[in-house]
Length: 243
Image (cartoon, rainbow, N blue to C red; front, side, top):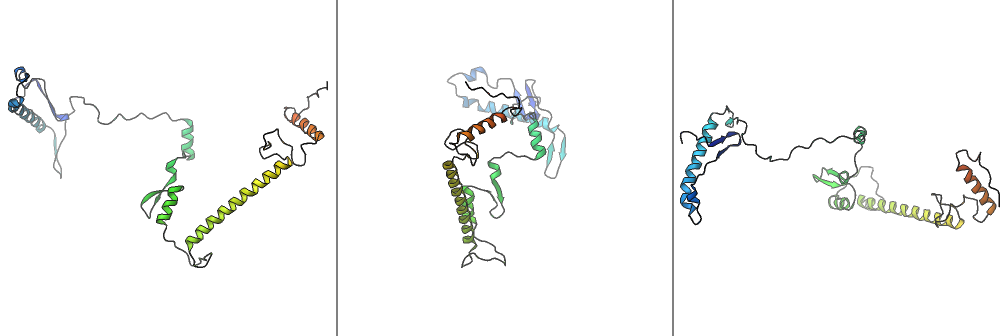
């Protein structure tokens, strides 16, 4: 193929050749015909297309490098679909996002539970079940200083750590039990809880020292609550006459 026909378009930018002609005649494509008989025609046409592409690439700018020769391809003719998606436009930054950047506030999430372990060269959890499993698996040696004093005979720092955890759990359990007993004693005495409501779901209980059955003190307390409820602190309120 000395000259490229006008129907053949060489797209060097895409390293492709387009031919709008029929390689095979319509009679060759009849049903029942043996297409393998026309294979030499197809191969000959493909060879012509390849020669046309190589001739076009020879005229492209060349640059010799240590690794070989580099060709600068021209702009592609055909607009092929993108291999990668279009880059997303930057979203509008809200005032809260700007504030978090200035203050260094980060969202709490699972990524905050990860930290890099230099010993195992892997990410591990800071807390939770996996963190405890990681500690039991890899925490097999402890370095102690010269001033180390074992809490018991044998001088085992692992046992000391377990003992400290048990003691902390016992202290927490004692505090919880103490607070529960205190709350129950307040309920029996009719003293309100810290939320200002009795634990039995009734009205606001009286402060310490005022029994719930003392009607005179209860009336004075209700009157005081009514004055506090107004902006003038009861200065312009009139007492309602008894009917």
